[in-house]
Image (cartoon, rainbow, N blue to C red):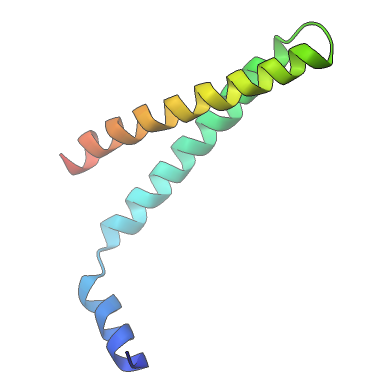
Length: 79
């Protein structure tokens, strides 16, 4: 593939809404990850074992929240 073909392909398929949608998703996901992690960390009691459990719970909860948020945002903006 030549450079001209690559640039032409990018220009033909470019949609400004995709950039906006990606930025909206990035901010939503960043908010979910940081707020869930902060919440789990703030309410952690005990020692190193509990910190490990809280971080595992935070990662699991954030992953599930991101999947749900991705579905909801896709339905709102693309549906």
